[in-house]
Amino acid sequence: MKEAIVQPDLEVRIVDSPVPVPKDDEVVTKVVVSGSNPKDWKRPVNSKTAMNSGDDIAGVVHQVGRNVHEFKPGDRVAAFHEMMTPSGSFAEYAVSWAHTTFHIPNNVSFEGAFSQMAGPQPSRLDHIEIWVREKPKLEVT
Image 1 (tube, rainbow, N blue to C red):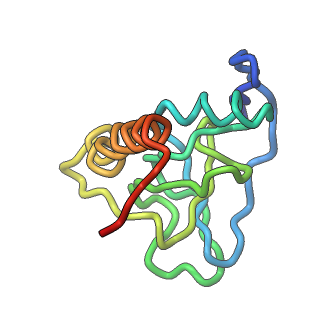
Image 2: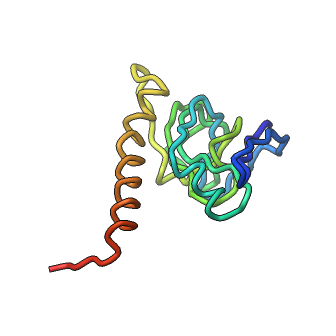
């Protein structure tokens, strides 16, 4: 499969990688739509580590782990990939935990399902990051 690896200098390299094999509680999805958020380029830059930093997945189930019973190959799903781990969503196939995966109804597009899952989150995370950077002291009353 093809996989996009984001470099610390923001160059993106397309490499050949094996299709991931799910662990017992994981789902491997053939990616149709992958989200791209500010953290997807901030992680490689800040950590100085090249990685497939995509985490938002929508697509069709390819394979499931032996403990996964709620999904089967061919199901339309959206999911969140565990950050900072291999097999992210900037690839033809991506891995997610079953508990971060959900079914997409037939009348909802892959893009629509993805936007419902991840749409507001990146802006909240950026807002929190900026707020913490600008206000280092936090009082809880």
